[in-house]
Amino acid sequence: MTDGPLVVIGDTLLDVDVEGDADRLCPDAPVPVVDVATEQARPGGAGLAALLAARDGADVVLITAVGDDPDGHRLCGLLSEELDLVRLPLRGGTVRKTRVRARGQTLVRLDSGDGTARYSPTTEAVEAIRRAGAVLVSDYGRGVARMARELLRDLDAPVVWDPHPRGEQPMPGCALLTPSEAEARMLCPSGYHGPDQAARRLVRALRAGAVAVTTGERGAALAVAGGPLTTVPPPVRAGGQDACGAGDRLAGAAALALRDGADAEEAVTIGVGEASRFVERGGAASVKVQEQRLGDRPRTALEVARLTRANGGRLIATGGCFDLLHAGHVSLLRRARALGDALVVCVNSDDSVRRLKGPSRPIVDVRDRVEVLRALGCVDAVLVFDEDTPAAAIEQLRPDVWVKGGDYEGEVLPESEVLGRLGAETVVLSTLPGRSTTNLIREIQ
Image (cartoon, rainbow, N blue to C red; front, side):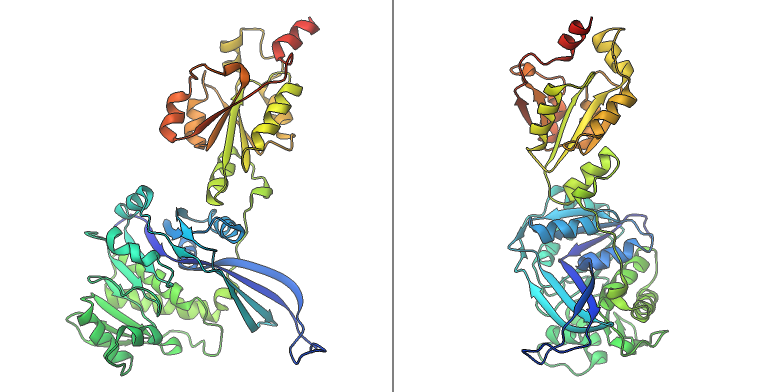
């Protein structure tokens, strides 16, 4: 038993259910006309397995390839609130599967996207694997599982491999394989003679600790290395219902059980039970996810930073006192926001302003300065810092770009060290002539 996170590595898809009513046929073809009522999006594939495990209360890290396109950004928004996401690059478009449903019945599925993972095992992915309490390889034939062999080499934590007919052959030494009957046929090229024989053969051929060939409403045939063959029946009969996502639910629940110290039979029993209850509740169609988008303007600066990164966006940050906000400030902030997808403004606290500007400043206290900045359409969030420099705030936000006004051009910034360490770009924008808080105060006096 370990307390490390469950790391799910595999291919994530965007699943969209278009729901409506169909009570008439199209006049120019014998097909139903669907009056659309709702559209519900959720992660599919490895993303669904990771999401369901996270909703069990587990600490989950998902390593997956996501495209830099609208569907990929949407997918990141669906995942970013419930688990830690480690993104790998995707070649091509994000895979999307759209099911058109009427009164709970799927009428047609539309598939789009040709994305495959590009080989790029990042430092972040390696570190996540190193900390793993258990690993689930959720292979959907899009290339992420190909990296697993290198990433999982010499790993002590249990590995569960959920294969795919178009995917990779599971690596030897896995604690548990969870193929469906169709996947077991693919893994037995010399002939498939039922789930029992396939489970026995695959335990030996792939040197696995155990193999559970899942058989839908019949449960699973389980073979354990050096042990007897076992049939694991489901506790709930859910035949005839939508089984989409049941394999992801089974594999994720079994991986968590292995992480927590269960043996293979106990883990598969738990997995079969969770999968059958999942189908009874409506399967993947019952999974509701609150989408997070950049346009939703989350409340805090750190939420904006995390969501921008999760959506593959470019985070811009800038800092200053912003005492007596004037046209020069607004011009700078508008141009800064145009450089990326979200702008966070770091604002000196009242004590910080007094140390920098003298005891007569600020003219406007920090609560009012923050309120005015938040009201600007170009500002996504404000972060107040109490230090003399924004270095600690930058460390928290990890912006892609740090913006300074033109009066700093050519100077070494106090925050240069942290910006260099984070790999952030520094952009100096020219200021409007004659606009400054100091001049404004002088004119008032």
